[in-house]
Length: 260
Image (cartoon, rainbow, N blue to C red; front, side):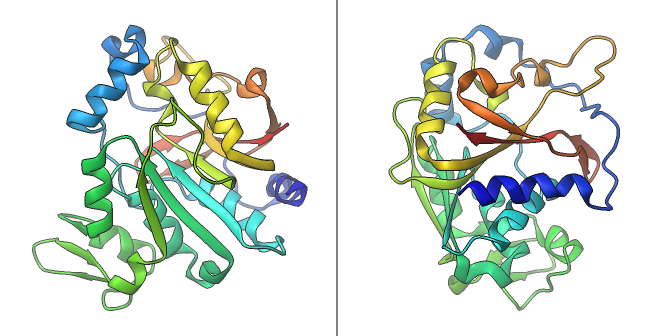
C-alpha cells in the first residue's frame, strides 16, 4: 500500500489552490473536553452525535482517497469511522461511481440507531447536495418536492454498515483507507490513546488515515473544535502533506497520515 501514500503526496502539485488556514466556526462543547470517553460513547449510543453530518462534506478528503485508489492494482478497502447516518460513505461512493468495482466501502458508528438509518437510506434532506455534485434524480436516488431523499436499493448495496466501538477494539477487517472526519474532536484525553491505537491497528500496511488537522496559523482563541486536532505522528503515523480546502460554507482542514 506504499503507492497509496506516494500518490497522495502528488496532490501537492495539483493546480487547485487550497492555500490559507481554516477558520472554522466556533463549536463549543466544554463538557466533552473533560468527560471520560466511555461516558461520551454512552451518550452517543443513547442520543447520537451532537453535530449534523451532511452529504459531500469534504471534497478534499475524497480527492485524497480517489487519487490513491486510481493507482492501486487491488481492491481498496475504505471505511468511515463515526459515519453517523451514512452520509459520508454514501457521498464518497456517489462521487466515485466509476471506481465502484475497485473499492469496498464500509461505514461504522457506535450508535445503532444511526446505523439503522444509514441502512434505510432515507433522509429528510439531501437532494440539493446531490444535484450540486452533478448527480441528477433518477440515477441513484429519488428526491420529492418536500426534500425527502431516498437512495436506490442497488446503490445502497455498494456500502456496508456496522455498529462498532473503535475505543474498544480495531475494525473487524484491515482497511487501506480510513476516513476519520468530525470524530477526533469528541474524544476526551481519557481513552483517546486507546482509540487511536485501535484505528492504527485497523489499517493495512502503509494504510492511509484521513482526518482534520489544526490550522497552520490560528489567530486569537483557538476554537474548541481544534483542541483535539493535534499532530498524530506520536501515535504511530507518518504525515502525508495535504492542502487546505473549503467545504461549502464551512472551511475544513484535511490531513492525511499513513501507518508506520
